[in-house]
Amino acid sequence: MTISVALVDDEAMIRVGLRMVLGIEPDIEVVGEASDGAEALDLVARTRPDVVLIDVRMPRMDGLEAARRLVRDHPDSKVIVLTTFDEDAHVAAALRAGVSGFLLKAAPPEHLVEAVRTVAAGGGLLDPAVTLRVIAAFAGQPDPARATGRAAELDTLTGRETDVLRLLAQGLTNTQIAARLHLGEATVKTHLSRVLMKLGLTTRVQAVVFAYESGLVRPGEREDT
Image (tube, rainbow, N blue to C red; front, side, top):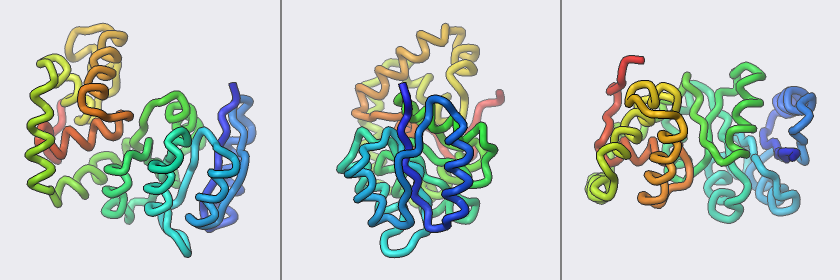
């Protein structure tokens, strides 16, 4: 099955580079390009891509506003935000809106391809190089009312589901979580699916956000791997 991708960036050379990287993959097809958020909304409405790669800083409508609208209006088109190190503080809103991933513009080509495939398959992806900085950016400005509600929702999880969520938010992969908890990977995936269902979430990215907003995990808190 071919994964359709839309590219959104105001720099033509960036779009050319992304298209070159993705175009050589037999299971990925770039179906369109846009140079700003407003064009992106029109492009996605017309082409219905599986994945949208979208820059943050663009004219007319920036990538974060476009991402929020895409998540709301086109939930079947999964959004990956392209970011740089100096934009971490701006992506908190997109995290809460439910985008499926964040990727550094400078990420190696293989990471880009992996991100597209992971998100198209229903997963979420936070570039390891930006995960903790992104989390710290929004966790440093907590919403007390939201935190109280989130904490109450934690009570719906079993002890094992809570353990899985905590380790996920601390940056561990399914394989690492399985090893830490002495479980099979399939069991970890089952627990994670139940966590998402009980909390009304759709992606791993949203689960990480929830863990920090609820106080289950705090910035700087991480298991040794």
